[in-house]
Image (tube, rainbow, N blue to C red; front, side):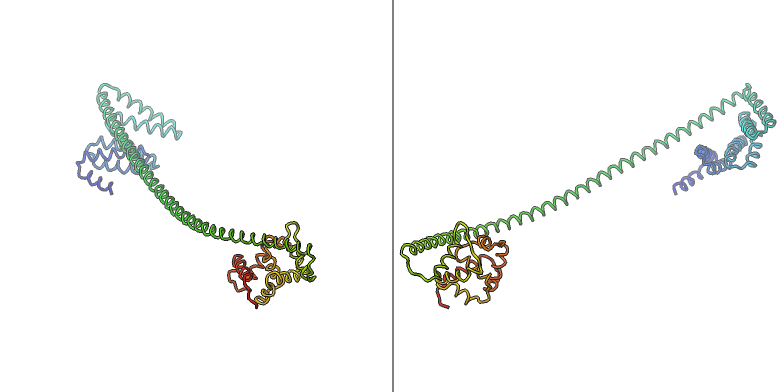
Length: 372
């Protein structure tokens, strides 16, 4: 579109200006080895020329271009027409081109003829009469070459400037885009950090609340353990008193009571406690009945679905053993005791089945003084 506008401006100029412009374009295309474009512009320059000598000059230039395009017949006719010029310099250049082509083709005799013509034209070129014309031509050629060189320099500087501006703009755009990208990433990371910090703070608050609740529960359990410890000590003292009474006064007691007391002492002893469920369960039940107001009978009447193993857990706990001590005495793991406690709680109607509720229920049964 820009090219069409430029051609429109050229067409408005006078013939001489149009001839010069098209000739300069032809030379530029020739330097680029764009032979078709060069021939097209040179033909347009020939259309606007007003002198015969200029036309002969264009014929010689066009012959060089057609030679590269492989149009041999047109090359010969253009050279023959250019030889009609009155300028020895133009004729000598044409003879030299013909001589070089014939020499390359191996036609030595004809090449020698054109070589002689080339020499003759050079002799005419350097006569006093043609020297002035030669200087004018050389001056014109140098001026044309200088114009072409200046145009080439301007084109190079323009292209360099455009490339530099484009590179700076691209670099600026790249830096701005990178800054925006990294800034958005940092904002997203900051947002994630804030959200994570908020979640962690919420978890910390929840843990602190749970710690406070657990501390309260631990305090209650500690108090209960102290109460149980005191009760255990009082019972041990009572046992020792009974032993002393039995030994010193030889009180007459039933054999079942003595055997039950022995089983109880074997269980609560600090050294090596011993309990065999199959042999000692009945004796331990007898001891609980005589020492705790028929405790084993009340447990059986309240919860008849309890198995012997579940009863063992209840019996051993009520005589003052902890859950770990019960597991050690029975030779099982603590989680096995926990599962049995959970089943006992379900049979007692305790939905959650926790140890705390089991302990509370045993204490309530121990404190109950009714005859069932």
